[in-house]
Length: 129
Image (cartoon, rainbow, N blue to C red; front, side, top):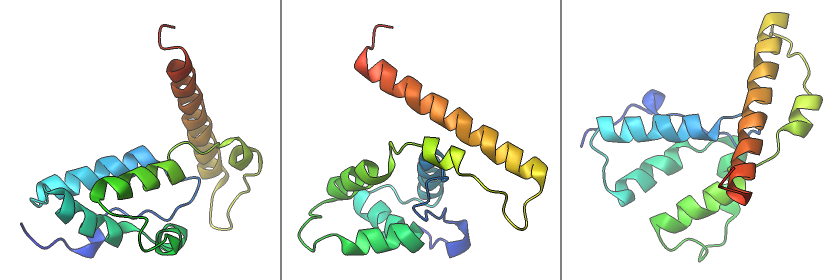
């Protein structure tokens, strides 16, 4: 098990625009690549990936609310997995340093994520369709 440079770790800020599945995928790749295979090892690394809102949220959890690695995964996914992107899509603004082309790409990316999210919900409610 090697030490991982902090710049190799994916970062999660708790923003609605972040792609949770991409973050989880990148996190697993880094863990596997550096030999962090045990849940306890991954937990230590995971905490180092949280930034800004996500870190504040995690630090606000009660001291006895987390008893295992599974608890961390459960509360994290409950908090960030299935939030609705519609509000964000309709309130998007062009950032100061963002070109119109980049804004359109970001818009289309979020629309695609919302469609995928709605399909997952539909499949969960009626898995035979």
